[in-house]
Image (cartoon, rainbow, N blue to C red; front, side):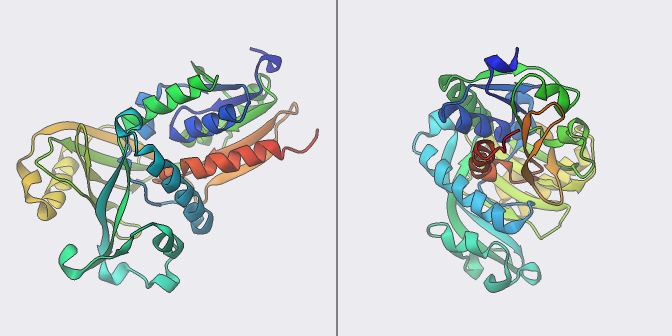
Length: 330
């Protein structure tokens, strides 16, 4: 397909690519989204879906993007069966020694802006921990990704299964390319700064858990999270830097459930429904900027969101739209 037939080519079919494509298509552009895999097979489909900035840098823009995500996902939560988003109360905790005071906490602006967010009482967190309570969007990702694809198509966008070997190749097919290739950017750009942070989780039958719960010390490789979804409870997890395997480790799965069961004993006997492993596309800092490609196409990069892709997607999509509009003249 020639550039005359397309205004914008978006590479990447996960939540980052889909939201970027939607914002552009609903803004009047003709958008063609291409990806190697269907959204259902993307890293986004494995995500727990909690709206909270996690393992993402730099903090200041990440909080701004996260608050935009909170705003939009909260609205989508008014139609949970269609969009997959719901508002669910829960607790974010960490060992007390690991938690800085608010005035030095890089997420202080997030704490201040989320409606109703408060410090957890001692009886609401494990002994020796501190935490915060909030009602936040929790997203059923398979449903949400289907919703996003349908919304893109309704705005006139197209979705194709195609791969490119380079951005220069993609730039031959459209005057504007939006690179949302996630971990694929390591080879496509190429950008060796992009690396995987492996996350393993277990899905179990819901024994009656109504709130989400996360316990994660900064930089920890083993975390605990319990996220009730319509299809079961997502129990996690791990954050292993530079681990490429997508095969679940039975011993790791057993340890994951055991950690969660210390907080929710009913999980110990819950039926296991699925084992999943996803590779978070991590980078020292999100790359969200434009550059001119060989041949003249304008490329907007939007990748490296680590464990916060669902949270920051809409905020980053707004930045993509701005960068597309501000493309310098050739």
